[in-house]
Length: 149
Image 1 (cartoon, rainbow, N blue to C red):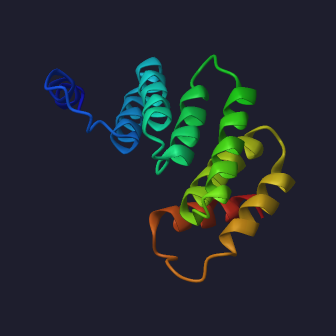
Image 2 (image 1 turned 45 degrees about the vertical axis):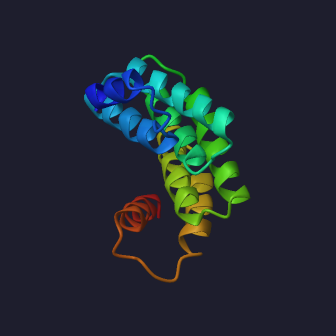
Protein backbone atom coordinates (compact mmCIF):
# COMPACT_ATOMS: atom_id res chain seq x y z
CA UNK A 1 0.00 0.00 0.00
CA UNK A 2 2.82 2.37 0.88
CA UNK A 3 4.59 1.63 -2.40
CA UNK A 4 1.42 2.27 -4.40
CA UNK A 5 0.86 5.60 -2.64
CA UNK A 6 4.46 6.60 -3.33
CA UNK A 7 3.95 5.79 -7.01
CA UNK A 8 0.78 7.89 -7.09
CA UNK A 9 2.54 10.81 -5.41
CA UNK A 10 5.54 10.53 -7.74
CA UNK A 11 3.20 10.64 -10.72
CA UNK A 12 1.60 13.80 -9.31
CA UNK A 13 -1.74 12.13 -8.74
CA UNK A 14 -4.40 13.81 -6.66
CA UNK A 15 -6.21 10.47 -6.41
CA UNK A 16 -4.96 9.77 -2.87
CA UNK A 17 -8.26 10.07 -1.03
CA UNK A 18 -9.45 10.01 2.54
CA UNK A 19 -10.71 6.47 1.86
CA UNK A 20 -7.30 5.26 0.75
CA UNK A 21 -5.61 6.91 3.73
CA UNK A 22 -8.18 5.42 6.13
CA UNK A 23 -7.39 1.93 4.78
CA UNK A 24 -3.68 2.64 5.15
CA UNK A 25 -4.12 3.88 8.74
CA UNK A 26 -6.14 0.76 9.63
CA UNK A 27 -3.42 -1.47 8.16
CA UNK A 28 -0.72 0.36 10.13
CA UNK A 29 -2.79 -0.05 13.28
CA UNK A 30 -3.10 -3.79 12.73
CA UNK A 31 0.68 -3.97 12.29
CA UNK A 32 1.30 -1.99 15.49
CA UNK A 33 2.78 0.95 13.53
CA UNK A 34 0.74 3.51 15.41
CA UNK A 35 2.79 6.59 14.51
CA UNK A 36 2.63 5.77 10.80
CA UNK A 37 -1.10 5.21 11.16
CA UNK A 38 -1.53 8.60 12.80
CA UNK A 39 0.47 10.18 9.99
CA UNK A 40 -1.92 8.62 7.44
CA UNK A 41 -4.86 9.97 9.47
CA UNK A 42 -3.35 13.46 9.40
CA UNK A 43 -2.98 13.19 5.62
CA UNK A 44 -6.61 12.11 5.41
CA UNK A 45 -7.74 15.20 7.29
CA UNK A 46 -5.56 17.37 5.03
CA UNK A 47 -7.28 15.79 2.01
CA UNK A 48 -10.67 16.64 3.51
CA UNK A 49 -9.69 20.24 4.14
CA UNK A 50 -8.19 20.60 0.66
CA UNK A 51 -11.09 19.04 -1.26
CA UNK A 52 -14.13 19.42 0.98
CA UNK A 53 -14.92 15.73 0.38
CA UNK A 54 -15.88 14.32 3.76
CA UNK A 55 -16.94 10.76 2.96
CA UNK A 56 -14.51 9.13 5.39
CA UNK A 57 -14.29 11.92 7.95
CA UNK A 58 -16.11 10.01 10.69
CA UNK A 59 -14.06 6.89 10.05
CA UNK A 60 -10.81 8.87 10.19
CA UNK A 61 -11.79 10.19 13.64
CA UNK A 62 -12.66 6.67 14.78
CA UNK A 63 -9.43 5.19 13.48
CA UNK A 64 -7.46 7.96 15.13
CA UNK A 65 -9.12 7.04 18.42
CA UNK A 66 -8.19 3.39 17.96
CA UNK A 67 -4.59 4.33 17.16
CA UNK A 68 -4.46 6.56 20.24
CA UNK A 69 -5.46 3.61 22.41
CA UNK A 70 -2.04 2.12 21.70
CA UNK A 71 0.19 1.37 24.69
CA UNK A 72 1.22 4.44 26.67
CA UNK A 73 -1.45 6.63 25.09
CA UNK A 74 -4.36 8.60 26.46
CA UNK A 75 -7.83 7.12 26.72
CA UNK A 76 -9.15 10.67 27.07
CA UNK A 77 -7.81 11.59 23.63
CA UNK A 78 -9.21 8.39 22.14
CA UNK A 79 -12.62 9.09 23.69
CA UNK A 80 -12.59 12.59 22.21
CA UNK A 81 -11.90 11.13 18.76
CA UNK A 82 -14.70 8.56 19.07
CA UNK A 83 -17.16 11.24 20.14
CA UNK A 84 -16.05 13.44 17.22
CA UNK A 85 -16.63 10.49 14.87
CA UNK A 86 -20.14 10.03 16.26
CA UNK A 87 -20.90 13.76 15.86
CA UNK A 88 -19.69 13.78 12.24
CA UNK A 89 -21.64 10.62 11.42
CA UNK A 90 -24.81 12.09 12.90
CA UNK A 91 -24.42 15.33 10.94
CA UNK A 92 -23.97 13.28 7.79
CA UNK A 93 -26.84 10.91 8.66
CA UNK A 94 -24.34 8.06 8.25
CA UNK A 95 -25.73 5.39 10.56
CA UNK A 96 -23.13 2.76 9.67
CA UNK A 97 -20.26 5.11 10.56
CA UNK A 98 -22.15 6.07 13.72
CA UNK A 99 -22.52 2.41 14.67
CA UNK A 100 -18.80 1.75 14.20
CA UNK A 101 -17.79 4.80 16.22
CA UNK A 102 -20.29 4.07 18.99
CA UNK A 103 -19.07 0.48 19.21
CA UNK A 104 -15.49 1.70 19.56
CA UNK A 105 -16.49 4.22 22.23
CA UNK A 106 -18.59 1.61 24.05
CA UNK A 107 -15.54 -0.67 24.27
CA UNK A 108 -13.47 2.13 25.75
CA UNK A 109 -16.22 2.99 28.24
CA UNK A 110 -16.56 -0.68 29.18
CA UNK A 111 -12.84 -0.84 29.86
CA UNK A 112 -12.99 2.29 32.05
CA UNK A 113 -15.88 1.02 34.20
CA UNK A 114 -18.61 3.06 32.50
CA UNK A 115 -20.65 0.06 31.40
CA UNK A 116 -24.09 1.66 31.85
CA UNK A 117 -23.27 4.56 29.53
CA UNK A 118 -21.66 2.17 27.05
CA UNK A 119 -24.71 -0.11 26.99
CA UNK A 120 -27.22 2.74 26.67
CA UNK A 121 -25.48 4.50 23.79
CA UNK A 122 -24.75 1.29 21.90
CA UNK A 123 -28.30 -0.04 22.35
CA UNK A 124 -29.71 3.22 20.97
CA UNK A 125 -27.83 3.05 17.67
CA UNK A 126 -28.10 -0.74 17.38
CA UNK A 127 -31.89 -0.60 17.79
CA UNK A 128 -32.13 1.93 14.94
CA UNK A 129 -31.27 -0.82 12.45
CA UNK A 130 -34.04 -3.00 11.08
CA UNK A 131 -32.00 -5.20 8.74
CA UNK A 132 -28.45 -6.23 7.96
CA UNK A 133 -27.95 -8.09 11.20
CA UNK A 134 -25.62 -10.53 9.45
CA UNK A 135 -23.09 -7.77 8.69
CA UNK A 136 -19.80 -7.66 10.59
CA UNK A 137 -20.47 -4.27 12.23
CA UNK A 138 -23.90 -5.24 13.56
CA UNK A 139 -22.63 -8.63 14.74
CA UNK A 140 -19.77 -6.87 16.53
CA UNK A 141 -22.13 -4.40 18.18
CA UNK A 142 -24.51 -7.19 19.23
CA UNK A 143 -21.68 -9.20 20.78
CA UNK A 144 -20.58 -6.16 22.76
CA UNK A 145 -24.15 -5.44 23.85
CA UNK A 146 -24.42 -9.02 25.10
CA UNK A 147 -21.21 -8.55 27.12
CA UNK A 148 -22.54 -5.33 28.60
CA UNK A 149 -25.91 -6.84 29.59
